[in-house]
Amino acid sequence: MAIRKIVELGDETLRKVCKKQEKFDSRLHQLLDDMAATMYDAQGVGLAAPQVGILRRVVVIDVSEERDELFELINPVIVETSGSQCGREGCLSLPGRQAVVTRPDRVVVQAQDRNGEWYELETEGFFARAVCHELDHLDGKLYIDVMDRELTVAEIQGHIPEDDAE
Ligand code: NI
Image (cartoon, helix red, strand yellow):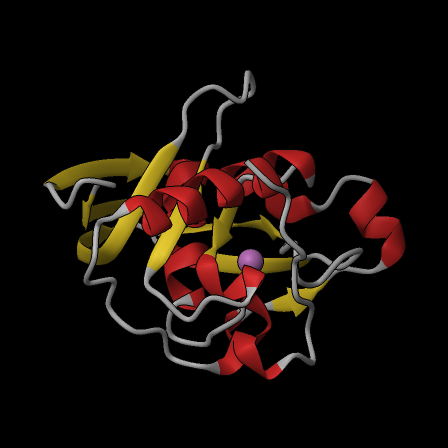
């Protein structure tokens, strides 16, 4: 496993639409292992392949506190959403910044695992938020495109009223 470099805002890789992952081979497994290592190293809750310069529809997410519930989503598709939540969101490609973003409260996503097997995942709350955020990356979208408002430095460090709504 290797830590890969995370590209930041301004790099055009982040604005490209990613291609479908066709091969479920050792190269994909290496990418997934590296993406997880990179996400954990950066203390993130999710990472999309374009963030490490790879234009493929591949995402890793772990929203658990213990950092031991890794989900690998290849060619993911959101098939159902409901409700709405308003809360803070950041991105490893936009270090030091946060915004208030409205997302669905519940998201059902279908994806392939590292061996190409399709599975379905029902997510709620912060997990659902992470799914929406990471899948947006695969289409060149960032949270700044859909945010309600950007937080100030003081708000990032403290409490914001929107947190109460979650
Ligand atoms: Ni992000």
